[in-house]
Figure (cartoon, rainbow, N blue to C red):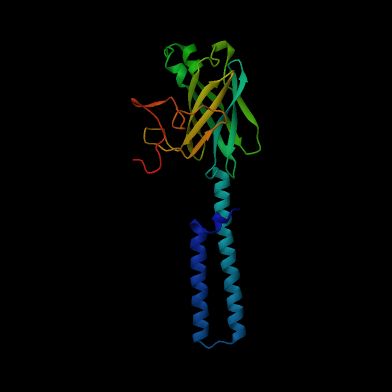
Length: 238
């Protein structure tokens, strides 16, 4: 269990209520001029009841987070295999397993060029990963990013993906921008709690070593929100 389980939710209410009851009992015992031995026994009994109730509430919260996934989530990490081939490593973040994990991977670079009414074009531009019933931190999973049959190897200097992760406990949206440096692609990604908009701020931002930055030292994400290119706002900017 985590420390937060003891100081949030029902555990905190049980702690405060138990302390108030304990204090009230001691005050009443003092007013009745009860023997000191009786007061000590009353204090110990009340303390044991308080500790048991508090621990029970914390265990209940721990069990609830374990069965739902708590605040955990999953995301994809790009791995370049060379010659336009690549895989996505499935990464888990959090203290608990997450359940019924699904990914949808859209290549925005391909979607802008292909006929989405054509089944093969649509399959090349958008992929659903088979549902993962349970995902934990120690699992090593990956899914192919390309399919030779669909001819969707990486070819452009810049490639952009929009990834949606759905699990039992939450949904995560991920923007991945790839930029070719020499013969390899370097990656940068952002994670959002909600569908990305022009004003959205990521809760995670990762830039691979060697990823090219613009003259301002920022990432050009190469993705539009509405009719404007997305860029991260600076601290204090509205």
